[in-house]
Amino acid sequence: MPLPTTILITYGYFLVFGWVFLEQIGLPLPATPVLLAAGALSATEHMSFAAALAAGALACMVADTSWFLFGRRFGHVVLRILCKFSLEPTTCVRRTHESFGKRGAYTLLFAKFVPGLSVVAPPVAGQTGMSIGRFLIFDSAGSIVWVGALLLAGRLFGDMLHRDPTLLDWADRFGGILLLLGILGFLGYRVYRKQTYMKKLRTDRIEPEALKGMLDAGEPVYIVDLRHPLELVPDPFTLPGAHHLSPDSLAARSGEIPLDRDIILYCTCPSEATAAKTAMSLHRLGIERVRPLRGGYDEWKRLGFPLDAFVPSVHTIN
Figure 1: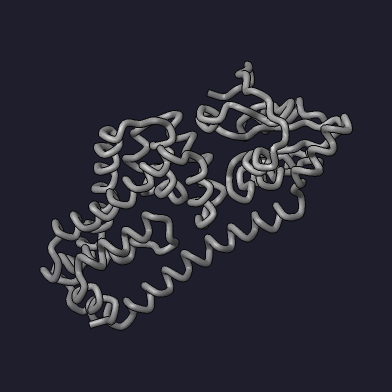
Figure 2: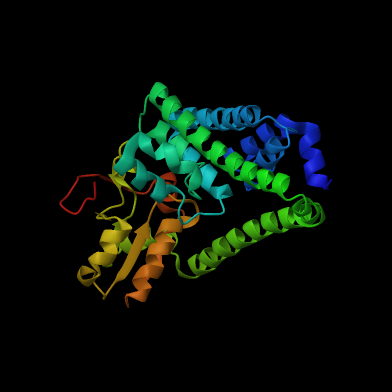
């Protein structure tokens, strides 16, 4: 019997609960292999499918409810902390706000299947003022569907082993190695993606003090606020003279962007992820003088630099 299977049988539902919980609080530890293995073991009656489902879903609910309450209390500060540890910074906050803007609580039904959305969805739900009762209904349903789908996939593999016992020899010999390689490959790919964006970001970004000096000197700059409208609800201010546009609408209106000045992009993502990604999109369209603001809106505000009250315009994306 391979070592990972032995550990799972020995610690059973505690391992399922603990591993799923660690993934759902934001640690880069994929729970998929553990749930698949638990599902396979349910076919041999070494584990109960229903008990494994309950353990996994409960772990999701404990982690998600905690982040929901933190999101309600501390807003985008919690999102910054979560995304600092996320290996999907380019999809972290922006995709979640867009999904909630379009689908509301229904986002929680599929969030766990989307990288970068799973951990951030609960605090965004709290930040947007969703009632805890509505959150618990939709989040519990989404948790059961996600855990159940992975357990069922593992169960089908376990049934195959029953029908063809020779597969068990292959699984015993290579199962542990494949599990380890799968986890390492998953982590390696996401680290590579994050480092690619970070390298580009460090080259182009502008310091808040430098931008403040440009504004004080009356130099022409074109400042773009890339935050989702939901992010402006608790803090309705922008940098002086900023245009509030979504990344997609900015690219679509690239012909209107002035080419004789610096284009300053800012967001509230850790490491200016949305701003960096948008800058690269504009570069591909031939717009060269694009610079993400280091630290984004939060750093500008922390330094006590001037802000304008947000006034919705015809260009605001709802």
